[in-house]
Image 1 (cartoon, rainbow, N blue to C red):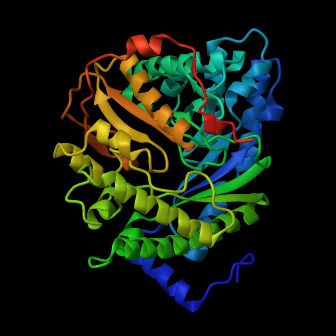
Image 2: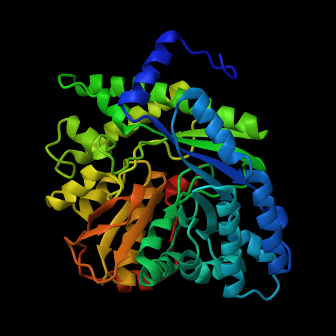
Image 3: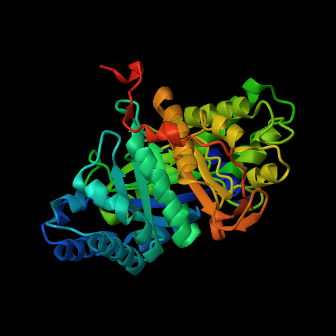
Length: 454
């Protein structure tokens, strides 16, 4: 029994098998830190305060994560930090400049490096209803901030079911993505544009520390595509497959919560949530696409792919909800193109298109993720893709996002390598007809009627 959680001998043995054979891991332990108290009229003082607070709060994160990893034998792939949206911290500044915003980005990136974490998220603006002065500054600073840093991640929430789609923000987000790609296209992997961004998401690039969170909190992201793959029986009915996936997700969630609570206890902070999202990597046997193909698809991207993904995502959520009262974040199935070798193969075969991928985002846990695009993709087209994803999220009351990677000088079919866990994939083709006049109208797409939930 650990922290009120009781484990049977059978559960322990099954978890050991998952670890040794099926690539079960804790993908991330993410420490949320409130930087609101660091805001002041002086940008330099803000930078110094933020850096000092981060180093103090996160100094033990890597050691405590290592200790939990050793104690339970569960690999922890990444250690990360999420901070208060820095657009809000910058609100207090007197006569700020883009240089000040970039310097703040460099300061928190330096703190992340000093404490040994892999990424720090929170160069974030929430502009679904409009721009504050801090939001304006952050939007202008994103390209230079990502170019100047190694660990910093940025997210822009431009829509919500309650507020609708801020098309002005969507248009500007397309410009930002394009500018980042021209400075350093690989930095686009650290930039995501959201609708309905969750405040307790431990996964990058979208993690930030929300207002509803404790001042410091541990959120954990667990991933187990290989473990879920083993639950897909060749002769099972679809209902039988769903039941097997649900039971397996239950066990994965329990293991993740155990590790998260142990790290939180060691740091003396609150435990927040466990996010059970099937987050693939380029490694063999760690693919969501291969799970869908094991369910009976000849290739992911063929007709039936959206239905199979809907079954998988729902079964994962059901298992997580049964296992813990602390399930949150995104919790479902990620379908990144470059990070999932099976998705990349489907693009190479010409079976998976951007349009089919977009349809699948209506039932996955997030959206268009790690999608390499031709270098000549226009800002208007990028904005149109983002607008489509926002519409899916707003109308369906779910999180959607776009993490798009225009690659200068590359054309559809060219293979690009992002590197490491971010993998590689062919550049995907997009329609040449422009949505520019539509996006250029600006204003806001009103919230759907279902947004009036009260």
